[in-house]
Length: 372
Image (cartoon, rainbow, N blue to C red; front, side):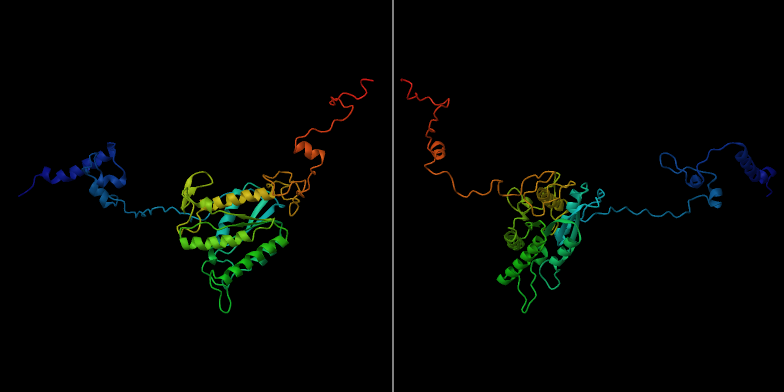
């Protein structure tokens, strides 16, 4: 059967017409990559007569590989580490507050650095070993470490805090000295007294910071024993004991991991092991230590550290918050007072009148020669 001419040429003619229309009539088409998959507003796929052509040319779909976006993980700061903060440049002649001890001392030093960041005349320098104390085979020689710094730099005060890492530890010997035995306590007392003596011989004030309450009763008993040793050996006139036990108890007098922070907010102050501190807790310890430092050193101005090493009569130009002296300028009372026969005693104690003085205006006695 023969096809008519119109049928034979109908398909080529259609293609020519479509091509002519494409080049003569402006057509608004979607972007190249979306032509094969254009969709209507209701979400149904629209018919696109040019889709086969664009698929043939490689434009029907985006063949580029897209990298899968990974979720951004927030970097969390460990609870006991300080945030990033800016310290004012310290004066070359700035005095040094030396902080000595274990992990708690390191956190305390960070807290003091934060609180004193804007004080140009004082800098905080730590000598710490996180997992060391007075006990154990490899215990540091804290006396030598502190003295080397004191004699080689302008140290104005020493702050000591340690004891956590001494729990359960023995003193070396043959045989080793068991924890919390009488001999252990005597040895520990000698260690504490030796450090106090070493610092005091250099005529430097010493602040010893006590251990805090914990969430474990046995640990509390051990910490209380150590605090008693610290307190007993800080009776020197230039040694102070900062007791932080009660400030980490709740209103009922029990341990709590939460409490008021330095800023007055209720925050977590203790670490998850209920022994250490969070950053807010270290800042709170530093707050009470800094208050004592300010009282002892008289502030942190240009004249704050002058003349106070062991001179209680020296008055700091910037002023002390309270005087560390325990004796008034008049000296101690020797117990000697006016005798009972003295006019002062009869007037002040017994209430008798003082003898009249002849010729004085308050003498109202009639003169003996007035009638002659």
